[in-house]
Length: 90
Image (cartoon, rainbow, N blue to C red):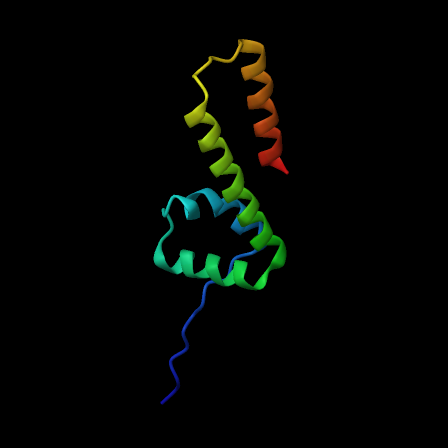
């Protein structure tokens, strides 16, 4: 009889970046979450990215909680959305 071979899912750096918000929101399935954890444990760049992303989310949360809400001007909103979209393409 042959041995059963377990398939272990692996993620690339690009896949980690694509899934970081789902990871932080606890929206990944068990297998993908395990693969994400394994990858960031062995990849210094992705581990640093995760730390920076967490810090950014925390800073934005702290900022929004401590600042009175002010709506953005249409031009500022348009520029921010364009910059965000451009950063996602990279």
